[in-house]
Length: 357
Image 1 (cartoon, one colour):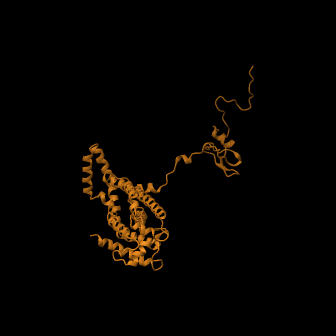
Image 2: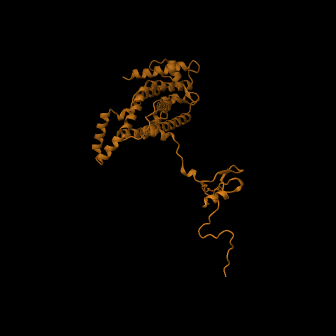
Image 3: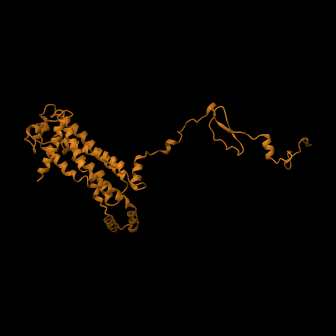
């Protein structure tokens, strides 16, 4: 039933292999690794429009978040009523919370097909799904990093295990090392990719939040458990797929940014803005005070008088000029003819001070 899909995947691999064989060794591991990586490119380009729909669905979910919050306050602890109200709102607005899975669902048959083809590969096997015997042998013996064939896995069974280990230069230790490294990288990139998508898409509620948590934690955990069953070529396919998803996410958000002020825009800005620790701005304990020229500590200066004009010193610092005697005279009650009136209770000028007995 699925033979046509297996044949289609094999044909795409064969075409990329034929292209890279024009300047690389047809039986080399790098040639088949590049063929698998460009299989990812082919599939993801075909699914690009579905990814656009995924982004639009996420933004639509963001737009109805304020109304969902109102429904949450309205229904309180009535979860069933709240869920029904949210589903009715999503139906009214034409929002599908499962649209975020659209780019993933079509990739499942491709992943299964590649897994099936590589699992059947082994030295001495007959031609697979339109491949010639020679091409099948090249794929079965192609070694990644010179020690691990792309068709090998951690849980190989007999007789495939014996035929794989009979290839010159192949050891169980080499296969185990390459598989473990690729599994760890595959799991980490899956988690990081989904986390970045969640940060840039903003918070969601209801079914969409459950789907995001499943993608964030469930998928990496499932890959960690089932990674030992996958051939090395399948691990390489998944790792390349994660890198493509991450790069595509950045490209789409750059070309189609969310509306300013929307939750998605705020989430994207928060993801890109580096957090500043206020403690880093405070002086360290025991630090010496900052001193200016001449060794004098820098202290806050008082504001200059309104009638003072700043002057510039030799060190470039500015200081206010004290008012002159004439300024003080004119500002302390000078008479129209220029004489100065004494302040109340002051001793007249020229009169000596009386001594106390």
